[in-house]
Image (cartoon, rainbow, N blue to C red; front, side, top):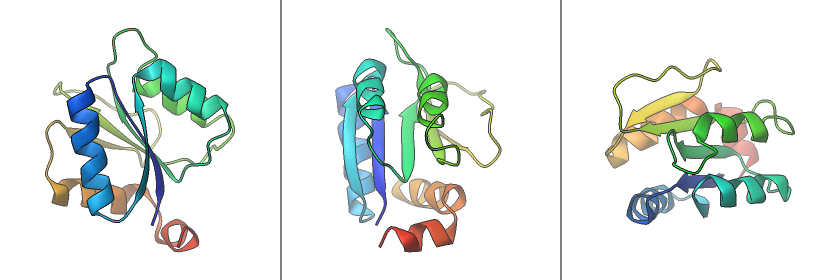
Length: 123
């Protein structure tokens, strides 16, 4: 089980994504938008994975959240959700999923983003 911070500015998308992550057996902390996510990250939340929308009006967006979180957790894996066709993450190993995605696609992205030893350490 991973502890995941899930961020989206659309409450319905956030709820669906969080439900998918929970169906995969993970603990999920939700943040609706970049500002609440920033407060959670700065509050010292310890997460194994960040799952975030890329573009969030009112900011910060997903890339900024990843950068903020990596100040204290440099190796934090990130899965970005995008409604647009083109996005290249700054850090190798980060995953990008197009909205909407299937449970299988999400599961595969987690497997690619989080090294097996990190998943075992979270059990």
